[in-house]
Amino acid sequence: MEALTKCPLFKGIDYQELCQLLEKILYQVKKYEKNHMIAQSGEECRSLMIMLKGSVKGEMIDFSGKAIKIEDIEPPKPLAIAFLFGENNTCPVNIVANNSAEIFHLPKKSVISLMQLSSAFLNNFMNMISSKTQFLSDKIRFLSFQTIRGKIAHYLLQLAGPVDGEIMLSKSQEELANMFGVTRPSLGRALRDLHNEGIIEAKGKSVKILNREQLIMQLKK
Image (cartoon, rainbow, N blue to C red; front, side, top):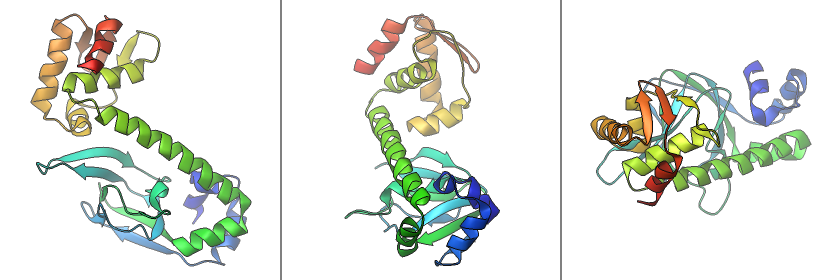
């Protein structure tokens, strides 16, 4: 359980104290193979899940059946933490194993017990809920851009911040296409068009914003 000490939920709690806390509650550690459906969209969240090994992805399925990847989650992050409590506490996305994964499951009653036993855990939980809410708000705003160009513009402007320097993309075009919920050829065409129009300069994974005003205009189309 030493891996749990690296999870933000247990910040400020050392290994010995964590072991003492875990002796007082129920929990499970489960293993999953690659492509295993760990949780399905709409399914009730009955436990807090924390990544111990491997990697999983959260994805949504649109009306055409295309999977839109929301994010990859690796140790020591928790899964769907913002949806454990509430009237409609269902998983908002499908959670699928990217590879062999090991996940720590903490039933809801055990989470409440930990909150009562440890003020540090309670504080960490509330901080993570707030951060996750802000993240989801940004995602919703991003997905609201209907055009591919708008999505590209939003993504590049977020990476660049207030300075129009060189941006090194950490994702491939295929990964970006999955994140945007579009095909790779469509993404490639949109990037070429923005390049040819002098709005950006794109060379492989290197991108420069040449005309910030015109790039911002893409958000309004």
